[in-house]
Image (tube, rainbow, N blue to C red; front, side, top):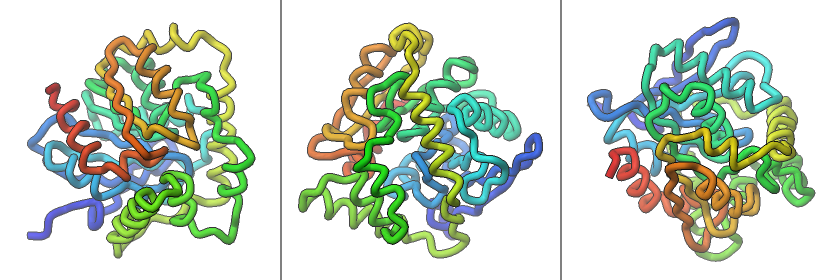
Length: 284
């Protein structure tokens, strides 16, 4: 019998309040709590690295969620983080999940924080990778050098990921090539790419998140859950210093910073990252 993995998991759909959410669900249904995975800026279901989610699926069910208006999910792309988080909660409720872990990468890490505050009893543990608190410096990802890459219509998506997620070193680019190769292992029922409406709406939400002027420490202190915060030591998309702010402000946080890596540290150091996440989710 063929094992269900990221490369062959069926894309499923669930209709909630006029929106149709696309998702994939696979892994050990007899293991620990399900892990709901929330994706990065313009990312789709196909952008989850098999080297990460397939190994985590050995311990528990993995649920890859696609927010409204992205990929094969219907509806308007939300223009605020709060709206995106509300879509996640509607989806989770529709699946009748009452207790979960969340892995939020980049933009997904913003949503994870909002959900933990809005529905604390739903969450057991959080993994926040390559992300920032609300009000985090540079978290809007609207710097000119980044915008130039986002809007380059001639640059293939995989080339953008290589440039944005990995350092421009021989080791970094070798890891980037390996990551892209892993994404290509899904040969059937590939997701639709993010449409032209996705980036502007998500950037609007991220810029508003970054420009928030409230009390960062006070907001982070509302999150009492155990949180694993990770990043590379030179994240050019959401500056690494934001991960230190998260770790300092959260009441029960563990911080891991991976060397010689950037926004895609979880992919560049996949085996080490997965080992850390597995131990954390098991409460070790």
